[in-house]
Image (cartoon, rainbow, N blue to C red; front, side, top):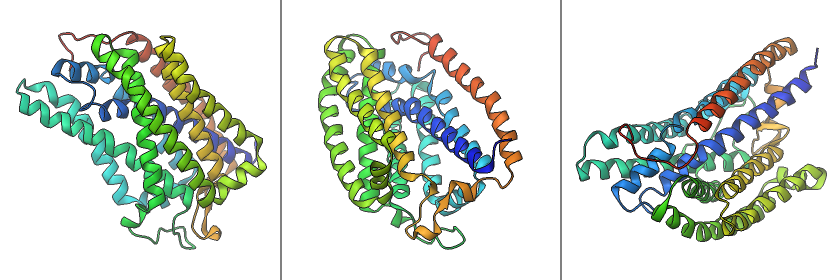
Length: 343
């Protein structure tokens, strides 16, 4: 049987994989919503944008559910701290996700322009708010949160929105919108496709600038990030992969390779999740006082046998999730078309 610490590390990697899948798949959903009031200019184009993600968005959120379930199953101590200390923030996130889902389903129930505009705005607000909250959460984890000796959060809701966390949140928004516009460029035709292509350059420039600013501030403010660069060649490899993926986006679009451009943003997200995990390791929930940080070894299930059994269950469940995702994306491949049952 594998020892406890090794099993905890394996579960940490599995959490990273689930988070990567969710960030890539639901990331372009959010990006399409962020662009909803800006790039599509007519009711038909907004319907096309919604139908580009319509068959996919709810399946993409399976990855978030799986991430939460894996966190609870393998690291109950971290789950308890996060879900109790960040209760208001999580309720805000849940509200935004529900608001966005309802907007998708309700928009086309009436043909009245005012009705559709209300739900267009709601769709955009939910799509902007959710990745902002995710980014702020990442910023708080990177910088450390105030925990007491029992692992309980001692701060307030408003303290979560400090300058560094907001910077990471805005950075997440820039990447999400770029990712979504690249997806729209891949899935649409005609004027909407060309307009998406025109937006990629400015969005890429904003993302690169925010990447540099966020990286510099992170290296100055986050000890774990500096330590990773000093001790792990894998961190430098992650940076290199991310830089090459970003550089590949304009190269792909100049050659008319829309899928490769979208793949570039997907690889960039994967590289950033890897760097995020490397900065946290070996902690799951870093504290402002390092003595109170929750390491993955201390908050993992106490029994190696329990972790082994759950790993077996994950080995059965993960291929099912991957198969489901692959089948759905293969079924709805190609350019989006409006039909009788479209949004």
